[in-house]
Structure formats: C-alpha cells, structure tokens
Image 1 (cartoon, rainbow, N blue to C red):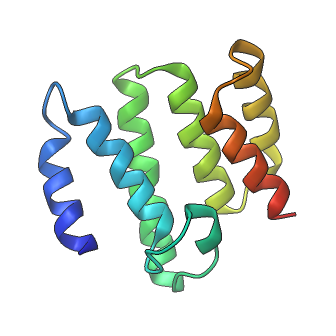
Image 2: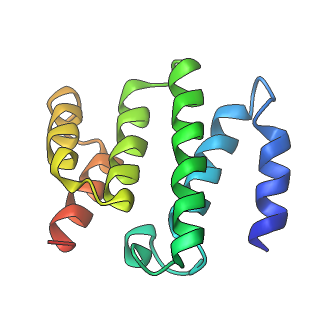
Amino acid sequence: DMVAAVQCLNIAQYDGEWGERAMEAMIDIYLKGECNVGFWWENINKSSKSGYIASIKVIEWLLNELHRRQICKNKFQTLKAKYLLFSGAESNVECICAEILVRDKEYVPALMVLVASFALK
C-alpha cells in the first residue's frame, strides 16, 4: 500500500540513521506515481495531471531537504537526474550523469538513469 508506506517513511525521515534512506525511498515511490509497478522510468507520463503535479512538489521538497543534509554527491545528483526525467527536463540529465561518471565510471545508478534517458528519446 503506497499511502501506508509513505506515512511510515514520512516518520522515518526524521531519524538520524534511517532518514536519508527513507527520503530516497519516498522519492522512488513518488516517481512511480499511481502506476506503482515496474521500473520508475516506465511510468513517466502515466499518472493523472493532479497526481503528477503533487508528486513534482513533494519530490522537489525531498530533494531540497536531502541537499540541505549534504548526502553523497553521486547519490543526490542521481536522484536529481531521475526527477528531471520525470518532470520532463531531460536536457540536463545527460550532463549530470556524465559528471557523476567522470568521478566514478562504474556508478550503476547513474548508468541506469542515463540508459533510461536514452530509452525515452
């Protein structure tokens, strides 16, 4: 149940040990939207307009909070790239992924986002 999961994760986000992971999980849930099946990139543009706008706002808030907490740069940029794909701003995704891959050429999450961006073209 997506609603129950978000409620539990919303509480967990304030925990010192689990907060970051809870926020990452919430971003993934909101990226999947109402079509909570498959991979996150398979559900882009399949949510209702109101659900999409609400997801965008929540993801933006979560990203700002994660940035404020100074999480790992690669992880943050990968989440941001996923968000950009979801929001329709694909133009910056390849640059973000390239920047990550310069630092760590085997960082699989960035490679997955890059593959998804190519698949959506």
